[in-house]
Length: 568
Image (cartoon, rainbow, N blue to C red; front, side, top):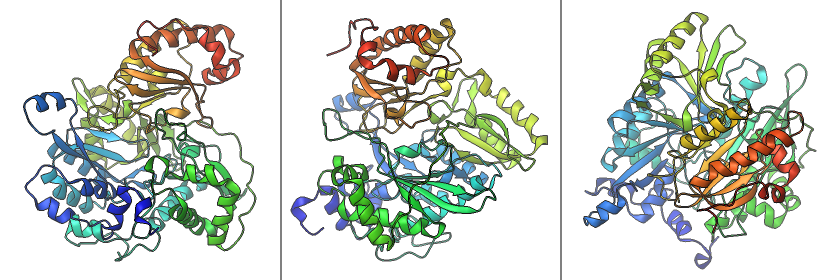
């Protein structure tokens, strides 16, 4: 697009950046603790967000001090794969250069917080030294590509990991900026870089782009929330037939803006194995050429498809692909998988899913998960997989190693999955305060209190075995995919949340806005009233989300107590 008047400021920053270089080298050398606005935008493509400690903001302002700046760095782990060497490097960096904790994300990557500007370059070089990268973990490009994390020896599970890597390689930026800025031009484990972007062009995509690939029935990746998704289909002999393709999913929205909304992806068609990469690139190209470059709040692929239509979009993809897409093939029902606990892989080895509350790997009092994981990875050389539910799988475990793993985890205060209440197991929250600049209220720091309260309520009602998906975010951007939860809580103001109901555990249905701006103190009472009626009015084994959908939100409104500090 050449009309500079009809583009956002970020679009001009990208175009003038010389393929993501900008003034990053100069800014790194400057004696400051933060970056300028243009560099902040470019840093995202390198996997870095500049943040401030909002807990300190008021006091520092009163003292006439600048905000407490630090950086969050996100790694790129295709399909959630983590080598022992990479994990131990992340563990070390968290202690030496970060906040002392590691966070697993809902897109199967790691985030490290609290890194100072002056420590960024050695941090990035350490990641590179263990064959890791942060390039394109953020920014207006294809981000971390998701795949089912289970290391099962079933052919289709092995194949989707391989295909995820192929997609990641094909859709990665080609600029040499990352290596010039952070690694002094060194390239060890990367495709040859270029001085241009054959896929993305000088302004990259209008907005972030998210892709997932999975096998029929396994929706651990929340397939329908992605811009682009693939489902691998095989025949009875496990020979690859091709891929169903979905497009146009996305979770983000903006409060009080009716033209922004969460959206499930649409089935686009079916492609043969040799067309996997070409169709992925074609989808990206259509969004590159037609996505909104003026309004970033309206720039995701879901809005392009919503406004122009799926048939139009299919035609555009087919023109770039050079052939027609084949008809969509029917799929079995989707199921929720979190893979916690012990599981056989199928090759005589086992894997263990370890629950990580809201993705925060830390040592705190007698709970020393971070130390336990580092010890096990170091002593046993274990590889890992990050799950889309913010948990970790320890993989390729020999039967003789299982007793030690159980013992070490127990000694470090890490509970087995059987001891974790379902309200915690099936809940997720984004980091929100104090580091996220977009957060309107708490998420990660408040959700444990709420799920404990709800867990006691369900236990008193004899409903403790119910698997109810609870997802909370501090703002409407939807990082923890709250619009798919049976109970979705989206921050709207300090200590207040929009309450959404009637999603499902399988993440195949959007929930619906039930109440706005509910004060956190009112949430337990409101939900308890709903649980009471759910117990007496549900159909046989009917899940909570399905019950809410069947009886309808107007009826549910008649069941709740009148808020005393809540709705405005």
